[in-house]
Length: 547
Image 1 (cartoon, rainbow, N blue to C red):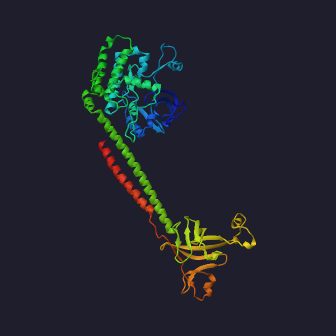
Image 2 (cartoon, one colour):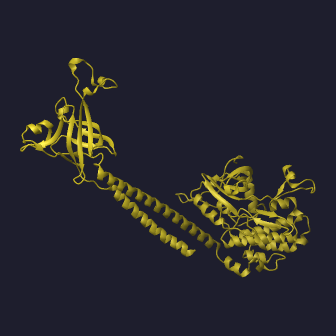
Image 3 (spheres, rainbow, N blue to C red):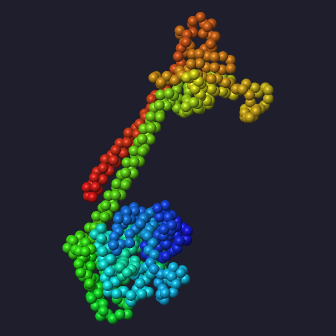
């Protein structure tokens, strides 16, 4: 039981009403903008039931259909929703009237606040005013109930749990007794069973409270003996319940049975094994009923509709539910694969545009026979860079170690800055390398610093080393007649008398142009989306063709 103030969807609980076999009932105040402050009757489905596999989809499908069910004799559903484990249904609040055993003393509002009971259902009427129901008022009540059942049955809905506590009533001068059937469809929720991987249906609800057990036992009294609990209800169940309701009305009063002989005969037939073949037949046999046509009901039309097998109606609704579920699944898959395809295509365009302006990130550019190689991290204006230590900056003279630096764009070139710690002079002290490295322990003079300037040639997809700058000089790529290209100091070019000429140091992409996986995934997802869309159109065409 939830406490007052707890929210159930767009409702705030004001009081707890009771618990039935399907769930708990609450009086709530609406917090929605369109109905803020109005009271609602909210049914909260049992968690043991709502946790069953597949119940959420079944609940939503059933409620969407039940929202369309309204008319004379039917108390309509207003809204439904799912909030985590809370599956709820709301109805308009039925105010009823305060029952005062001594009329004329005070107004109804004050009487109710002083503990007077409120008369809302036929069960309340039979308990508080059993002798006030006359033959005429009973005919009016049964007429409303039959009209509601007729419309519901034509739409494939069977109540299955019809009893006096589910019949709302009111009285006025123009209509002695007006009635509505409440909680249509809830019994079918209680019949839902998910099927596990082992193929076994789940057992019935095992945690019914005392109130729920009493509600379940009361409902069983208004169903045929052969009606099995947990099985989808049949049309004859509701007609049997109507007969039991009439019997209850007759037995609750203290009037002679001979006065109700015609109604007793009708109730006996309604509760017999043969019963009435349809709601129209039952309504036509009501004592005092003259002409069904004024209600838009004829025995012939209803008999034709009643001839449809209830199992066929149920299977048709199951097929519609499965079709709607398939459409929902196909739409989700189409949208998700389409979204993934668009994202992959956008990633391809961004990658293509980036590679149009920048070298491939985290990809080695190297040249055979030359020690140097380069890698650039991704970035628009700068990022990390990786290279190889030249021999000139290695105290051992060999070079070849990896070195990490940074790159940035400058004058259309990629400026890659590196540095390497110089070898320690052991004769000046016994400090180790790690003792030099730290804040304030080193200076620029403790490092070899050099900067390589490279230009990216997009057509050839290579990096061209333009120059190298260090603390001593600037170096440019050049070559002699018999030698290969390498770096020479600036002055060597002028002093060589033309023996050293400018050359290119070209660093091609080592792994070559790779596959565009982004474009591959884009085409794959978009193709899948188009296939799902094609299948969705077929299924929707089938559904709309049926409609």
